[in-house]
Length: 222
Ligand code: ADP
Image (cartoon, rainbow, N blue to C red; front, side, top):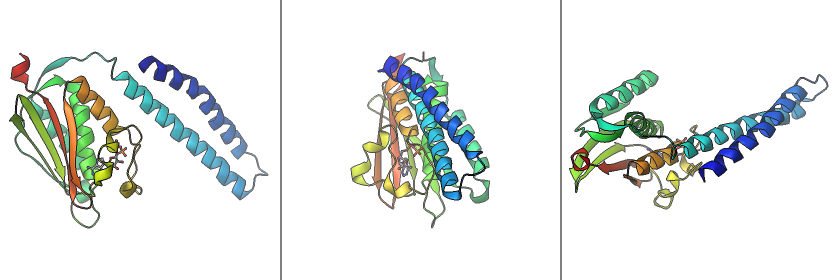
């Protein structure tokens, strides 16, 4: 699957780059009317979008191959950095983010950062316009697993969609006006599985969501 998607993506990149270039060249034609301009701009925009999707497939397929540098990680530091970055981005209407218990995890630091950065930024991104965003992060130990929860009071996910959100490029109907590519959670799931862990979600539409990440407890592994 990895080598297949890698070569497919590479072979797709050239023709898409050509589409983009020809669309841009045509856009410079003086005699082109407004409607024609608009259509050409759409062609160029869709070529960009396709390029982004191909890069996403490349990143997704690379996860399997990347060598992990697994160590015991103090999650406190990682989570603080992620939340501080987020607060800088959202300084106009700062979300209320609380970090409670943070058990250590065993894994690749860059990859763990990627998991939590995705989940926490989604928790803020998919907030309701009518109420201030609130996000709580905590962890507990159960049956030799460290289980992290990231809960929000945001838009929520319909029951029938809850499995689909972890598939590549899937975005739900209730988030149409919020930008995204539908790639983050697919990558998060793949990274977690590479760490022999699990991810699941509990959510009510219009009420909020809680994402759970369970990874083997560091003590058990050593
Ligand atoms: P993106 O955010 O780029 O759309 P993701 O893979 O991170 O991609 O998420 C996939 C979809 O899952 C989102 O488009 C949204 O429909 C849903 N989703 C993810 N996180 C949340 C959340 N915290 N609250 C509500 N919906 C969410």
